Length: 495
Image (cartoon, rainbow, N blue to C red; front, side):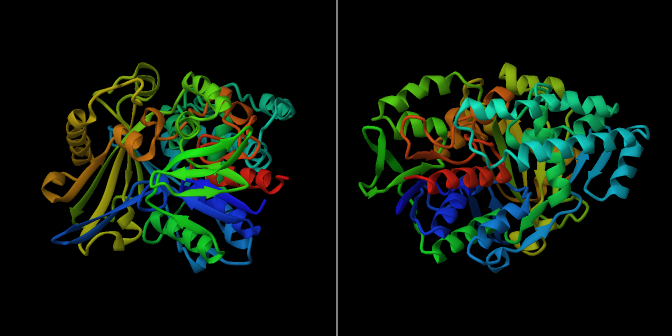
């Protein structure tokens, strides 16, 4: 293989392109938007006070070793392009009754936090950590970068899945180790960061706890967008080409081969292989509209379960807030019932839980002096379950979210706001071609994981590949970077 085209410049597409270019494959990335990053887009908002920088997300960087590896492929160091800053605590979890829980990998501090909730659960947590370490080794180290192309690979993985009761949910397994309900929430909410319901997502995803403990939680100085910029700098330094602002209109096929792409502007590129980091439904339904085999996949994808969407309020305010950590989870009054409303019932409930991102406590440069940048994120049903006009609903939900933050953290928040805007499920659908406005692609349940997820290589078009959240192993920065490793291996073996 001499030439490759990658559709989409999200983390998965960038990581794949870096691997291909490092191996001597002339690689072109074609990106629809004016900036690279995909879901890791960013905005700059000028005000009289100065300019605020807002990351779209993701904002939690884990498994930095997987990122270091991309630079190491050509003997380079990530520090040349990106400064990763440690975040501590990883998260502060807060409940409406005033209880807070600082979650980190500092054992002494963490055990003290657990003991404050329930002394007996310290021993249970240690057992959970052992379990998490085991599923991390089986599910991430051994299988994270393995492409599941045939059912035999799933059969081979079955003994480990059975041993660690993969059919159970993360919440169920956590509940077997600890008894305090708040601690059960603290040790199970992580699946929400990859689009999974803790009540239904496979227990294998408990590996996220071990992943964070071993690798830490990090933030890129200047914002997640600077990690994207660093990856672009590495890719272009290696000789790769990035084409921005020109959406791919078609992936061209001839018989059972992908031959290249055609963009909205009319530009065409030929390639020995095409990989798509675009939404998997958009790729099959729209970009491959001319392929009969691809169209047969569309109906099957439509019948699958898709992760929920998000409603995100970005706001810049007057003042510095050193008492509010970088990452907070503000739990609402319900947990299981709220998740059922979002995932099952398609209800926009009156209550909600929030992820609050406060990057200026780590890097003040993201806001003018004397100001702070935040975003508050609420999981909401996707457009298939809750088909409303978000232009009408959005402002109402935005005010309720800001009111909740005001009641719990910043009493005069409305008076302090200098700039704000929201990002709704309809924006995910419009800007990212995300099916149903899903923020994380396919829901990560057991029957939609590994072999049962969209394969890294198409079964009928052998030089068509997939990378990113919709393929194995799934969403989140570590997941999509690992998917790039699996897909690159297949592509570099292509005859």
